Amino acid sequence: MDETIAEFIRRTILKIPMSEMMTVLEAWNFLSESQLQTLNLRQRKDSLAQSVVLLCEEKCASLSDAALLDIVCTQVHRHQKIWDVYQMSKGPGEDLDLFDIEQFKSSFKKILQRALRNVTVSFRDAEENAVWIRIAWGTQYTKPNQYKPTYVVYYSHTPYAFTSSSRLKSNIPLLGQALTVASKHHQIVKMDLRSRYLDSLKAIVFKQYNQNFEIHNPTAPLQERSVGLDINTDSRIIHENAVEKDKVQRITQETFGDYPQPRLEFAQYKFWKAAMLTTTPQTPTQSLQFHNRFLETKFKSDLNGGILADREEPLRCLIKFSSPHLLEALKSLAPAGIADAPLSPLLTCIPSRGMNYFKIRDK
Amino acid sequence: MSVLRPLDKLPGLNTATVLLVGADDALLQRLADSMLKTDCASELRVHLARSLPLPSNVNRPRVDLLVFVINLHSKYSLQSVEKSLHHVDASFFLGKACFLATGAGRENLCSVHRNTIVRLARTYRSPVLFCDLEVEGSRAAMAQRLARMLQISAGHVPGVSAMSLLSLLRSSESPSLEDL
Image (tube, rainbow over all chains, first blue to last red; front, top):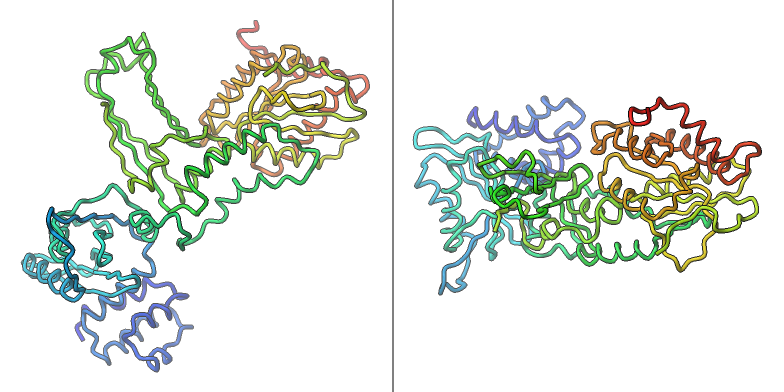
């Protein structure tokens, strides 16, 4: 077995937490049951990694076996990556044709290899017709770098693919091309949707978010605060605005539904407010407001013009919302009395439009 | 939709009623719980409202103390209190109203400046109390203090009136520039 493969396996093993070691190794399905039983899980991690490497050497592990281990590892820790969503579309007149997963794999690999020559592509089938693809990029003249791979999750028979964000921006067009051609689509567009939570992204693009679905690390404590106020046992406490509160609850439920929200951790709004703010001082007040626990932004142009009056160039502004669980946070804004119900449609349209990066211009 | 008045009803026997007004329900609820837990000779009633005016179709007891709760972390809560203030009779501010600014402990999260609240309270000639209701200890202390103020303004403490308490609280502050 090659020295570099041994080192790659060793480093991958070191990334896995001890508590998940066995599950990952079993899911890898490379070492036999009896080999796994010889491993001593009570020793230190680097000696454990060493013994795994020794076992792999016995079985002459190849680079593709090592890559599979890396995929399994990423599948378990998928929420450590930030995922982009790509949407593909067919051209007019192109009908559904038969899709063969094997054919997809081979043509995907062929396209990348033809372009770069040095590239490692590995596949692993997952649940729900998903295929996980790992691509270690190289160039014409350099070997593939196994430590900075891109992961792609493609759901066959659907136009959606999820890719882990990578720093190698130059390879993204090629990756898009390989995906479109291999899956027999015509065009590929990057959606303005990103998150750590692959399952939530999937729920959003496949419109499954109104069903109960599993989320990584369920966030019970976040919800407790907002739900907790309904329990009012003491008769000496009287809620004066009960009717109003019910109304807020109802509106919130109408906008967000009754189900747990898909998990996103940020949303971003980019505004280009043009210079018209200053040229037409007759407009009494143009204001755009967002309420958030931390943030409120206001653009105003009144008769005096203020400090913005002399600005020639357009005013640009970027608003970022971030939260461990953004949509649940937005959902609890109005019931918690932090914002008025209903919320701005810009905030509530995130799951229905499948977007959390917005660019907003003046009409 | 009527203006809230302090002395338009007869008091109940040994009961003292406080009205907490603030946008953040959860905080009000927790403050109310803490107030009811305090050891107090009078029977306490706590009314919670998001904003004023109160719905007029309900029969409620006389309000002895009016507390406006402002969360320093949310401008929205300040705006909502400012709007509510229009629906309060001026005689409430003769010792039967106070402002409570919460979240004062964590300055990095504040989006409302303390001076804004101090100025607001001064405009209404009412005391302002800073605390952090999210913190258990601070909440309990504040609940105790409010319960005491409530007893005084309900007239359950012989020899001290709401007005005299107000003047005592005011004298402890240094006079502002506008007052001089």
